Image (cartoon, rainbow, N blue to C red; front, side, top):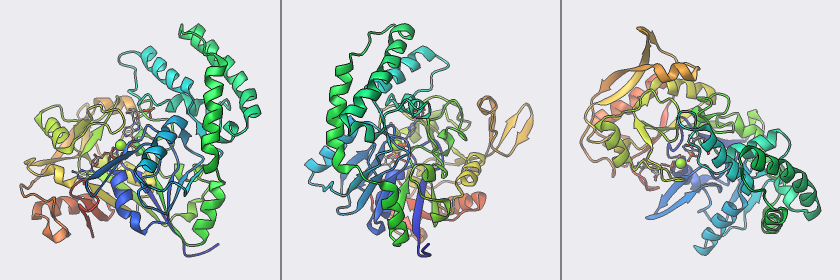
Length: 428
Ligand code: GDP
Ligand code: IMO
Ligand code: MG
């Protein structure tokens, strides 16, 4: 085993949309291989470079760098229509897509998964719905684990596809007709496009585990790009208000076939305040004017669904939990510029429940919904920081905020976002 490994894992530390895409893109010039390992087109990772904005849903955010290897690992659920739309869009912009490798073991999001996602949400009704992205993620992972899924490799062989789909569709049609009062899906309406997707995907399919193994052992710089974030993790998040994959560090291994001792660094992406989209507990959500200002100044509208994101303050117990789960070695702190002109900056350091003080993240989702945050208020700043290039150029109170976070989370902040553009980043 080589000792010159250079493998970064980048994960979201809150409820998603921390700015992972921007950080991946910003680090990209030094990276050889970009990898997505879980989730699917529920992600929306925004990259803005030289005024050009691209939102990646399935493809790694390093796709704008020509000539580098981009990998979709086995842990993903791939919507072929989305995949083809994203690759064509890049191709039309003159980007090369030759060095894109897709695992044959990734699961395929089929039209019936997207239909089920919507029907299940409707059936859950008010107060129970999760607020999913409607991208078929949950139903596709359910099929994976119940061993009724279609993998990318199944699309490549029409006979295998026909055989598996015949059985799967019979089962799905029972659900559609008997439980959801819908019309059955005709076999050919699913089979024929799926066969074509297989033909279109075929040139990209490769043994991604072996490719990555070799790249790691050759000392190439690998960047594993997590989607969603720790608090949306299927096991460790605010269940049931979570996504259906392992979004924290552990998912990187099952989702690629790499091993835990391959990692050299874990980058936790932390937004300088907190947002959440969809339902579920969010102790530091601000329902007053500040929440609205954060939404407006931070442009907090979903990159996938366009939904307004719920906004609030930094939550230290939540972040400590997230640092532990991920084994974070460094923090990329994003959107510090959005806090400019906010007046005092609230930071939640503990919670109160029935007159008792709680300093750690409660794992019971029902408890989380009833907590009252205890805030410390740090002094803000009014200077425009969007052109700052060094830490020392930041106003003293902005510097103090960064140092406060480092101290509370016992993890160094190595990168600070002061704007959405690739260049609006301070490296320390
Ligand atoms: P991701 O899902 O974690 O990749 O994040 P999104 O792309 O969904 O949302 C982050 C949003 O914030 C995008 O619109 C980015 O362009 C933007 N963004 C990222 N970093 C910064 C930053 O440091 N400052 C500002 N103002 N915007 C940022
Ligand atoms: P990125 O990678 C923010 C949320 C949805 C919903 C829950 C389940 O851009 O940070 P799903 O469609 O996955 O079954 O929805 O998870 N969610 C995200 N929230 N950012 C994301 O991705 C998200 N992906 C899913 O809003 O609450
Ligand atoms: Mg996003």
